[in-house]
Image 1 (cartoon, one colour):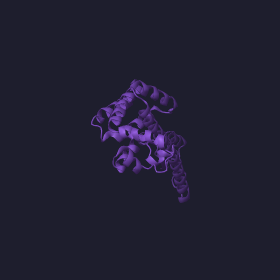
Image 2 (cartoon, rainbow, N blue to C red):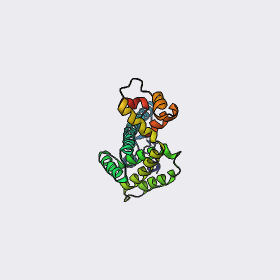
Image 3 (cartoon, rainbow, N blue to C red):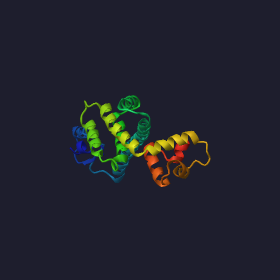
Image 4 (tube, rainbow, N blue to C red):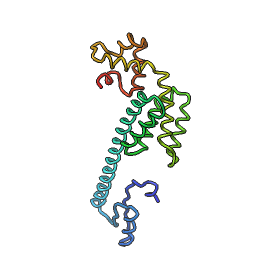
Length: 219
């Protein structure tokens, strides 16, 4: 019962029953070590060490999986941001999402990337709650049109971003035309292009593009 609740738990049984069938039943249930009483310290410590090695091995696998997932989410979030700059309507968003789904190993990773994108705007967008509700529906219903739901969310996010941050597009266009200028800095753009506070446009630029201004220059 405990293993059903905690499947990664490692179990060592110390028993006074010298019965093969009893031991075999315990192993079938997931017991890693079955020791008979009386057992000496070395035998017990060896069993504990073997079990700890199994725990460490499992932890390394889990950490590697988490790291790989994080890399995927980071990459897909950047692709979603890029898609938002290029797509001008919901159909183009759908088309871009369909291509992303082909290269995505797990659709839940794409949904997680959308959640991250929405989370960036949640404190600014009054209608963020309906986006979260749609995301929850994606997880709860297997037959839902995932691309359609995500496209609907992104259409609203992109529309709000463009309405708020037309200056970011202006910055990107200026960078494309003047990236060879040695004086091109965030302060220069703030003073001569958008005429706004450098710290503010720097933060919003990073939120919208997924890159700091200095890294964007090196693309």
